[in-house]
Amino acid sequence: MPLPGQLNPSPRVLMGPGPSDVHPRVLTAMATPLVGHLDPEFLVIMNETQEMLRDVFQTKNQLTFPVSGTGSAGMETCVVNLIERDDKMIVCVNGVFGQRMADVAQRAGADVTTIEKPWGQVFDLDSIRDALKKTKPKVLGIVHAETSTGARQPMEELGKLCHEFDTLLLVDAVTSLGGIPVEVDRWEIDAVYSGTQKCLSCPPGLAPVSFSPRAMEAINRRKTKVQSWYLDMTMVQRYWGDERFYHHTAPITMIYALREALRLVLEEGLQARFQRHERNHSALKAGLQALGIEYAAEEGYQLPQLNAVKIPGGVDDASVRKRLLAEFGIEIGGGLGDFKGKAWRIGLMGYSSRANNVLLFLSALEQCLLSAGLKISAGAAVAAANEVYSKN
Ligand SMILES: *Cc1c(COP(=O)(O)O)cnc(C)c1O
Image (tube, rainbow, N blue to C red; front, side, top):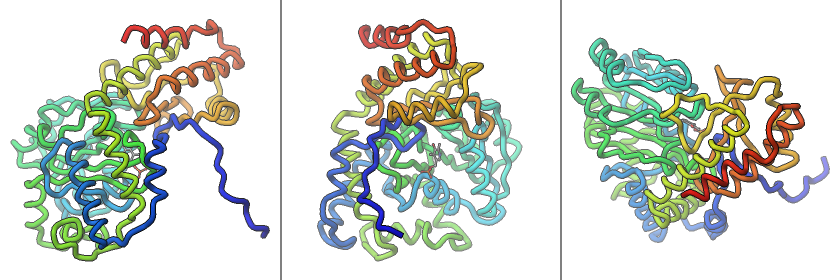
């Protein structure tokens, strides 16, 4: 085999369900020299990263740190530490990631009950209360930002409700953290996991997690060892805590990246960052509406950072996405599960959430739809988006 050429990926505008575009400062941080994972300088970097993570999660939880692995490793970490064989767990399923959480919990030996809502809808407190009453589970798991449908689960009061039943609340915040508010302490969340490649705009590879004191007590009361050696919090916390006891080699470069990504989040300010996501979402939505395109998630519960929309009739899913990528360098996501072939998922996450991306995408999509023979008025989408930008 001839030697492959030097790596030279084409520039892309990442507007799918993740990864999102990475800020140049994060890439620069990744190109800095390695230090050892027990180097005194690295220990400071770890502390700084944890402290900034607590700010972004809006928590005082001591056990807050990035798990080595992608978002799904965060999911697995939370489940295997909270669950012992035959423990009862309720998982709320209204999309792919709720399904995944139920699968992970079953594999971990939980006695799983799922409650379901149609894709694109969210759960109300009454239906969750009914399920808690019936099952009285140890853990209830729910997805805050369901990336497969673009639905935003309201979180107010949910933690309080779970605690009335002595149930721990486990939340998937993979797509929400850094894009919309995630208030771990105020919402009384007991275990939460995220991922770096969505609204934190860092490459994939780490899963920030946080455990409440109540969750830590439950973990310390376990009768059996955590089934996964690698993800066992009782061991990993000895490295991330004061002891600095070697467990596994920290992915140094990824932690450099996350540290810089978190600096960018806090420099901008959480509120300003959430407003930016809202603003670009409003402009994109106005543009899509001008093209006659509808959202897949219920009105009032749509995520600003993940716009799941119905593919217009007569338009071929794959050929449009292929053209967007080949001609314009734009990546968007196709549908998953029930939405396969029926929805596009347009991400405006973190560094990707910018007016120039919204305007570029709308004009590129317009060309694709015009070529597909759709009767749309040329220029209307960009004009509608610009109107939103001019107003706020
Ligand atoms: C992306 C995603 C995951 C999985 O994260 P990976 O980094 O792909 O392992 C889990 N939950 C949600 C809601 C996601 O969007």
